Length: 112
Length: 115
Image (tube, rainbow over all chains, first blue to last red; front, side, top):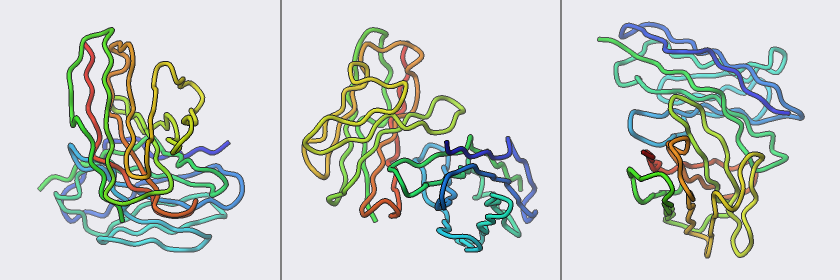
């Protein structure tokens, strides 16, 4: 079956530090991959996505590259801000069914 | 895109009672889903709400406990029946506006606490 594994949090960084949140997956076929962000007290928002191997999704300074050879989709940002503090979820959709499969979520805390 | 609203935003309920959560979308959507997010956990799909027919439940979830209605393409309800403290979670409505590869949008969630 499908599964998504992401690094456990919380991840605590100082402002302007470099961020990496690891995400690896197991899936049949050729899934689409997503990063969602959940700010405190809010629902999930799509942050970025990639639909095929070697695609790079990017948004708001965040990037992730779909690596089929390592089955990974790590989230990176060169310089985090306090406003980036949130929970980040990696997810996949194998396109053969309806459901998104989510990782466990990683809480990011950015200190001034 | 799709704008999703949920009512109530939060509630505190007594065990043994039931709560119905409403999900309203600002446009017609092809697929609607209900998720549960237990405290500190990731999201788990409860069911797909099908318009005009019974919902499709995921393993571990049953209609008697989580009855779902979807009378049209913009509205759905999820009822949490005979609640226990273990049902304390955030319940999220989610939609897709297009086919299987289209973006999935999430509502703000309903935070339920069962005493």
